[in-house]
Length: 355
Image (cartoon, rainbow, N blue to C red; front, top):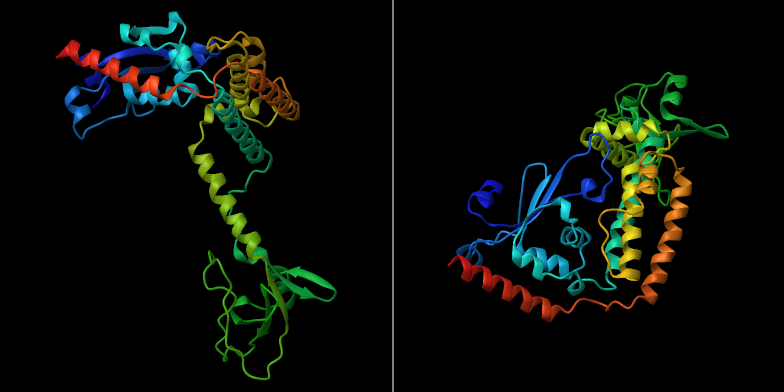
């Protein structure tokens, strides 16, 4: 099933412009996102070919099957509630059956957790970007040797420095474990290259040190410490950072760094949008898609706030949402049985109309 199939077979029940253009938060370069609802043909629904969602390759255009749409509405999914509350001027197609889906059937106190949960996700993303911007990882990857240190006099030296000072090569080193001292090794050296010592590593991209068999009675030249935990964490961070660099939206990244505040301004804007919508739902029983706080949200997107002030303001807003939840007259959760019966009614009506 493709988007073209939905259109040519007349299966689309609802279609609208969503995202920033529906919120009235679009800026230069903003995409135009399309969302909608479709009816799966009767044979596919009753058979083994249920398709919950159809989208294009970039997910800029997404349609949800009627049953999936209502299932997500019942779970107070923010995206679906926003879809149902789309402003009239953003609606492109609307079947009469969609008008039977009244917003009051789906609003409940659960919105505190669903909208708040999305907001927490946005904060996490913003913090993740802040960490990456403030702590870039050099393209030249560190190696195991950079996490090895050798006892020297009353302190320690990086292994590479020690080898250079001692005019020795790592290939002639033999290491042995020391009981009860994790990641600390006795370091022996074979000047003759006849004892079969394996060295500290064999490949530049080694992830652990090598151990050797040492002759009985031999004395260690010194001791080596391998910061294995630090090396493991560094490798994980290096991989994550450069994967992020490869996958990031470069235009958006440059926009975020241009304001010099070291956070993802778009994610933080959506954090406050979601929190504001949660409070509005709990207090007013309304989903306000077109944002009445547009100017404040756009100021966040422009990077006019410091990162610390935004986090403090978000924490304060979360407290307001919690208070609104405590005072809200909304039900604890939607009436699941009523919604199930409504879906059956809609599907029966639609299938009868096209049979």
